[in-house]
Length: 378
Image (cartoon, rainbow, N blue to C red; front, side):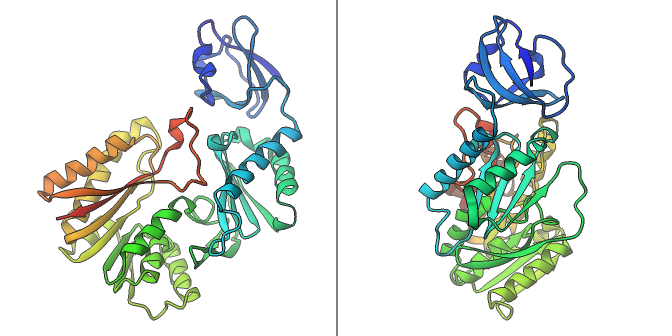
């Protein structure tokens, strides 16, 4: 444990409950071990918070604002609160789903940590080296709160190379998915799109659907289960498309009207015209920093422009951004610019966001990373 003091006048942001303290606010330059537990006070030695240290622009990630050093009881209580929240929303006892996000970083008061629950397997992903130093406390908190429901814990590290694979089968909205907890993107599955996949299923009956950046087929299977007349799934990853084919088989949809295409999504959409009733654009994060935001906006415009040219009049476009630095209004303006350039009239049907098991603290708007629109294209 180390004591850290802020510069005079720099306690304002911390007093507003934001979970990050930046290096410029620290009174004296520090070089501590990543993950060191620190007690933060203002310039007059008044307690502010407990957190863990990082040798980066975000110097302290806040864990607690109670002046008692966080021990194992703190971790167990924080996990208990997170589990209770998911129970309240019905995620833990659903008849048609056995997976949910248990810990969502700052949204659950544990910055840098993600824990996803997959039918007894918890995949814990560390988003920075500091939080990884609390691996033992995290493991004990999971064991304490989940008890017999916990079958295994898979830790995904920021610096350890992921070797081998560990596969499992989960169910979401009545659809079964085979996922790889080790090799898969994020923790193996994109749980944040749960409600948006269900929404697509409600609109898909009798429609020809294109799912770009399809990964292992979450939106594709939702569309087929919803009664789509045909689904085309496009991704540049052969690994993802192989899992998609296995997921089709798992759900008895191997003979369904479905086509997997290994291709660049934009090039594929440029090869078709007015050919789909519904198009899904769910690309990876194009911008992971403010420096990359301009190029990301151009990329979002490019894929939306291609989709708007490929969709039938009267069609629905499900379009998303998971880039944290691209705010909703900027994303909406980008879709507007694409529509303006191709000269098509569109209207907003839904504004979409991440599933509520990915909570956003009102003091940390940066946690609202997933934003989406369903637009009707005339």
